[in-house]
Amino acid sequence: MSDSNMAAEHVTTPPDDLEGYQPLRVNIISGKAPNRWLAKGWADFKRRPFFGIGYGLFFVLISYLTIAVLIWTELEWMLGPALAGAMLVGPILATGLYRESRRQAALAKGEAMPEYNRLNISQVALIGAVLMTMLLIWIRAAVIIYALFFGLTPFPGLWETITVLFLTPTGLTMLAVGSAVGGLFAAFVFAISAFSIPMLVDKDVDAFTAMGSSFVAVTRNFWPMVKWGAIISLLFGLGLATGLIGMIIIFPILGHATWHAYDEVFHNVSP
Image 1: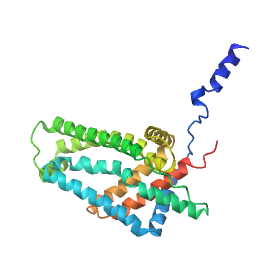
Image 2 (image 1 turned 30 degrees about the vertical axis):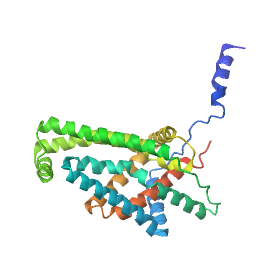
Image 3 (image 1 turned 180 degrees about the horizontal axis):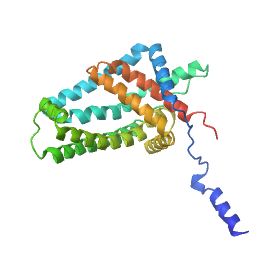
């Protein structure tokens, strides 16, 4: 047998512990897909509005509680990073919305109801721990950036800080730098969390497999996922502008839409 044939045999024959291994396959989607996901999310919400509103209320109450604790403990300087981080860890709270969209999709196709998978709480908690760690790192980075521009001075207060940030050259420069650094954190966290929790709802996989699969799917569909991330950020900003009240509706719609994003990217993949 020639050396070339031996090399080919070595590559195509997996070791025993990898028998049955299949490489990850994802669908390549178009730039119009995020609009489709949002429309499907809205349709799911309209079918069971009170179910979705319950999740939206829960998210808003958790957010208000977090804000109250930060103000009560005189940590108002953490409000900005914490609210930005809420958008990143929100997928953990939307698990029930993914299940409901999964159920509705099966009904719409006339298929048998999907088997109820007992969610592996430990794997969800692991992803939650990773996301919270990234959030804490971002908050620490925000403190360092603030110190680089304003020195080791006491926090002047929420309204004074807002005035300095938006009405002074130093503040505007710090906002630009902070946004750039925060964008890097947000991009990474979005990549590992965009599809990981829906995958745990749908399949019996571990947290690192889910996060890795999500990262691959996002990078292979880079520009559509950039658009999807921008839509999420825009709607979240709209929710903040309403004092979080708008999140009662926005949160469940995004939760339902996220399931349809996962469904379209990972199901019925061509070999």
